[in-house]
Length: 373
Image 1 (cartoon, rainbow, N blue to C red):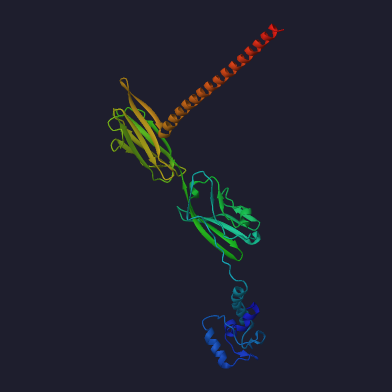
Image 2 (image 1 turned 90 degrees about the horizontal axis):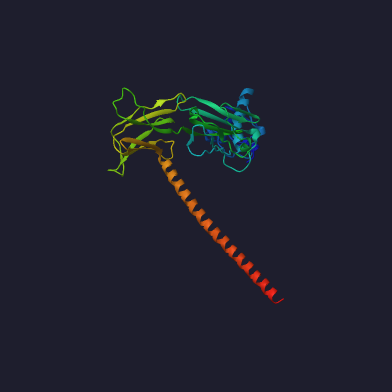
């Protein structure tokens, strides 16, 4: 049904308000009452008598203002009939996204479909709702020829906009960038939005060293295991030991003092764990686990007997593995080089022998020629 036909089957009372019908509509009073009863409670999309004519419909006893408001009531119906809704949908990759401190991140926001969008009527606004205080502010906005970044470095690709990609790029992410991001896409007259939570993590810098002796100390020696610059605050530090009597190793439960996490100015944390050394030959390992680490950080300390004194060796599990790997590599290169040199030497000796044989045959031929000449 065309838009102009809508007026034929919408009752005048519903469109323009109360009043009596006047004119040659061809509708009886019973039909009018029945139609009023059917349309009570809202507009009904049903065909009316074919003899109704929109040009013949008038309302008596109404002012121009009532007609105006009646027309306004018709507009939603006409709009829905002429322009069927093609709902806009925004898609994001999951509800959570993680990035490391000082890294770059792209927060995905796309509209499904293959037809290029008209950038003249397309726009996007990115909001950030902070986790700490819950306030929301604009991070980036773009519509038409206007674009503005409220966070340094924030950007959305204009070329991607036409391809239905409204993803937000943030360089050098900091802890203050943590929070809920809302992508609001507008393709006039429609709009849609979705949210994603961005988690910013900071990996700890792990170190292991012996504590310097102090006058007030009780004579015991300690080694310190430190984790610096990590976020969030939750972190686990466990000590293990290996001895000649216990080569399988076990977790240490005594002689350990772990302090509280101390917050830095940039929002990251530091923590220190102390282990009291015993006067035995042993290997200790400090294992640090944090959500930002794909595998735990392992730092090794070995105490060994050297004459009448105790000696110490430091390193990480990765260091030991690397050292062994380098030794194996050097040995392999030496063996391959030796084999190559031997083969090269044999080849040279063979060529030299062939050369001598060729010269000997040539001398014999010259001697035979002189004798018979």
